[in-house]
Image (cartoon, rainbow, N blue to C red):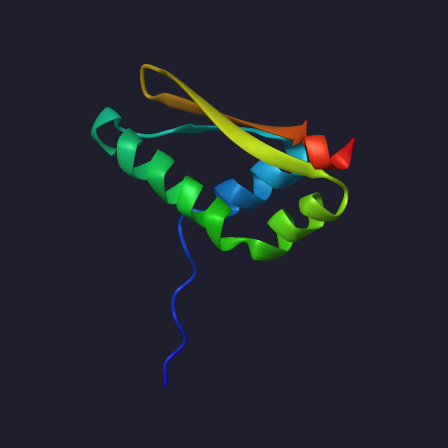
Length: 83
C-alpha cells in the first residue's frame, strides 16, 4: 500500500499552532478552499484539542483577507469548566 502524500495545508496548521499567527499569499479564487482546509486540519488534530481541554481551554481561528494575503490567527480561550 502506498503512503499518502503529505497535505499542503498541514504546514499552515503547524505554524499556526506554534506561533499563533500565519500569513500566506494565494490567488483570491482559492481563499475559501484554503481557509476551509486549514479548519479541517484543526478539526483532525485531536491531540491538540485534547491537550487544550486538559487545561480547560478551547481555541478559535479567525481569518482576515487583504488582496491575495490570508492572515490566520489562533486564539486560546479559557472555558467555564477550566475556571
